[in-house]
Length: 393
Image (cartoon, rainbow, N blue to C red; front, side):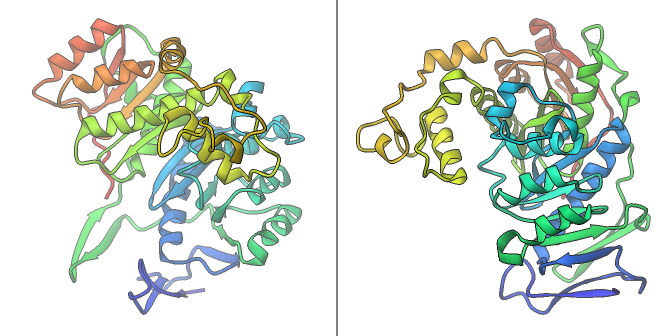
């Protein structure tokens, strides 16, 4: 297939639209089911690069959940604790521990379930049956993977009344060194960002003495995730997964706050009060996710209030107080944080510390690097300067 005609571009008025190879060669994909759109393919190709690089860097199966050209999360195939299984709503999945790919999917899809609603999924490895069964029951637009087990493909093809978008990509495909894009009819050309992110990038410690292996892994996850996140961006990672992504903010501190609040929510979803919420049996998965977010963050409505709780719960739950949240989050440590550009002020470190950050990787190069280093020393945070910016636009 040399080209594929799209229904429309970013918006319905942007026609005609298609994808094709400038050099006239075949596209490196097969569309096995559905009819992916313009934004679907942007998510597919960005997310595939992310999981491919994670797999190469850490030698573990990797999964990304993508939405509007940025990851909601990315994770590698590490077994989940029983509490995390319950928080990710996968404690009922048989054979989960036997499939590292399914574990990676459970983590990636379970991190920020509200933002992953209607996501695009990328798998580094051939999709197995366990992973396919989990994907089938979530609201998702499509998937890209290097292959599919026959039964797994049948399961996915039955999703969305047979219209689920399923793309197979050639894992050996290597894009051309130069890439092009047009803005306002003007063509931009640049070399592809083929910079390799690995443990060697984390050797320049400017605060603290050493990085444990778990921190090296999580910082690599954070930095590779940032490489495919719309800038400015900051990513918190913990236990083999990105737990908070702050994408596309104009201010670095707003990235850090946004990602930090998502990381806090991820931790609080494992609070005993949240895990024991008495949901009614007829509450669907998306509604349940919205209610949990409301219960933790006290957003648009008080879900525990009289007149509200009856719609969601079998009995009125006790609220999660601000004091309980502060005390619970104060126990969290060992979080890793990556930034796609330098921190211009130490306020970012102050905010990161509040979410349990113990390890940071950022390019360095700010005129206020000394203030950032001093703040890391104050909290015992290990800081490494990578010397490499990771903007993605």
